[in-house]
Length: 359
Image 1 (cartoon, rainbow, N blue to C red):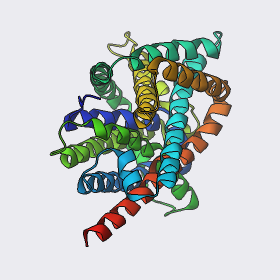
Image 2: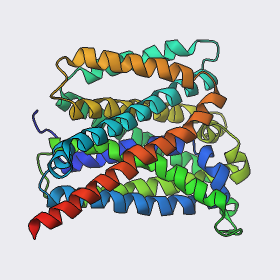
Image 3: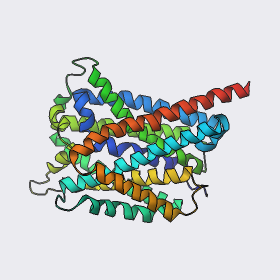
Image 4: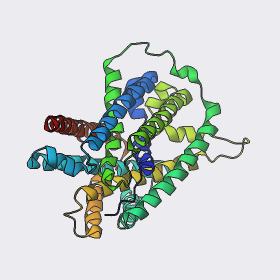
């Protein structure tokens, strides 16, 4: 496959995989972290950055950016294949989480009377069309649409600023570090584990000289945007109200008014949800394709079967808010296991064996 990805493009992939979920259902994390959720987020972001920097450092050290080749070279092949299979399961579950979150949001907040399966088809059929194209086309779609999304979010952030009361963020750690604080950290870390969705794309990089630098830039930008967003949500609604609303960002956007008669904040939030989850879904689906590229003979058939599996499971998960938000906790734990802990252990083994071979 032609290497169309640069290390600068990789920044977009990092942002696209980490930003959307945590900001969409932030109530899941604020429920446990309350006004200190942003501190839990900071701790999780530091762990995420250290983890990902270690992975990139190890990949560059062994001079192999292809994670499948890296694992099969330093780990027994049956175990390496099992690791890649479990990692792919993590990508599949994240794809289901993305499609379920988007269609549930549209169904419950915009078109209640229309069935879930209708929105799933509207989500998955364009996905099959985009995924069937060559990677350079997919990359252009991701970069252009995500650039519009970042501009959209910037405008919305400016419009919402007058409505915030930062006293809601205080007092800081009034109860110290509790069991709920650690629950919040674990769930946030599970959401941030989505950064590993970008690992299969490393083999498409055409320049690895500045990879560490651009990876750090991506992690720093992610940290700034997420902390600003979570602090803003708490300052806008207060911790108790933010924790008891399924989609806090929608309530924030609905309050936006310009000149006392123009109300269009909803548009910005809907645009974020639709574009953000669609891009994340595309990256998950194509990531699995990159892992098993040598075994997949027909892209259309593979992506059609993949979409069918996502359709069936998402239909079950997204049928109502309670089912979805009950499932989301387990999606975060699954992501933490398959997309962070598993790769971390694997790359640690690779690093140790590489050092032994160098002696």
